[in-house]
Image (tube, rainbow over all chains, first blue to last red; front, side, top):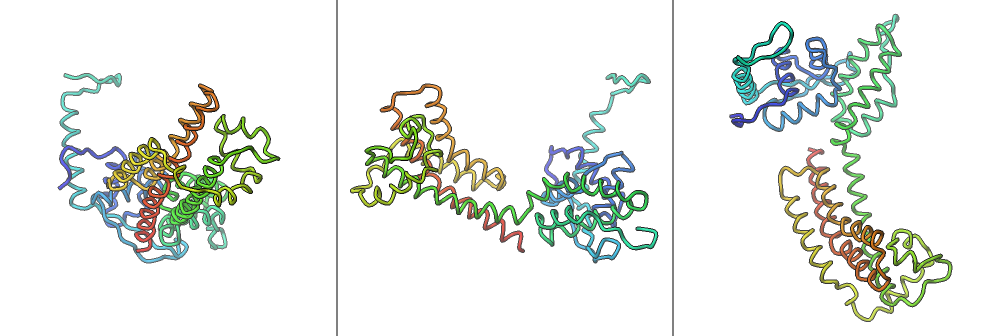
Length: 115
Length: 238
């Protein structure tokens, strides 16, 4: 079980969502490029790995090493996958955000009002 | 890739830096990811790809440094080396307790002593030459007992022990906390002497407190830190 009331950080959420979108091919470079293309987030690979490892310690993701390939200079890929705990945390986060967004209207001018 | 289809090499220095700091096993996936994207970028512009590689390396340094086995080992050796400060300070106090006058060659020795400029004095070779004689002339070890410093050190060690056993305290934080616990009384003493410029006879107890606190608290806290660093090195090797 994810800890109740613990909301994921914004970057943790987008990283978990990127892992889900990449399904079983989520590794550092692919995640970085997806974040760049989808949300224009130019993140350093080191920062991405730090977040992924922090989430791995929390049990939200798991990782394993793939085979070394020549197009990577003979180095292995480190694949990441969202665990059941990670999926639950994401669902809780979405539910919390949806609840908080209820009644908030974004006007055409960009202003937000609570109705 | 170039037109001849031979891969362009990323900046060797950046690669080496990441590899040395992170270690072969830890750096491999990161270097592989960088290599892969570097090759894609090199198709359009090699200088831009090199600049990107360096930018990624620099921005990845905080991650690499915090996971670096080299840095952990360096910190462990530094901690071992810091223990050498204790006998030096004990010899200095032994010399001060039988203090007659400053040896020739030490300029403004008394002035530096009463203003708490101990690091400066400890770099004077003329003073170091007096240490062996001072230690052999010591009749008892009462000069090493300073109840206020002892009490403060016990509190510091208890605080350090608590932080060590708290699961959430990272090694970097623990190092910072231990440094603070060991050297804060010294810094406060320095500030007190600097601001209030007390008369010479009042400086003695302050100096004794500053120096003896380091002597009391450094060995146990350094041992705790070495223990944590050893555990970290072991876990990184697994």
